[in-house]
Image (cartoon, rainbow, N blue to C red; front, top):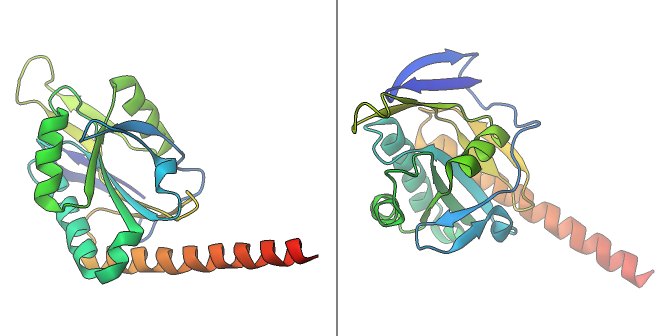
Length: 201
């Protein structure tokens, strides 16, 4: 599945809408959080993570994605503490930390805005197969961006387990997060039991 948006309008969808394969996609990364601290994906070990990529000047696709994340987080109840929600800005020139903080906190207080150097963002985009291309940058201060718009679900062990295409209802994301929470807890419980058994031997 590949969804690309042009000037934040849907351009093409390849394959049926549904949950995409997460094989050979994803990986650890380190960026700067909107509060100025360094954030590494490894910091979220033990939690489920949902990641969105985009930019704050996006007129509709990114706000829709972040509203979907916000709705899902609000529906998680106490389990919201088991999820880290990340928004990676691909436009570091305009998306300052101050602006990124204001933007993400508008959608949800648990949403962490991240950015980095153009080189860092390019490498992370390659890891997650995120495609993006600036439109009219250098000639128009209101330049836009063509970018893919999936949501990425990462389990508590840091593995990318699900890719959700843009446009699915919040319930689809909520179900994916709950499933990832349950399976992650089961996996960690199994590992703990196995370790205790090994130690006793």
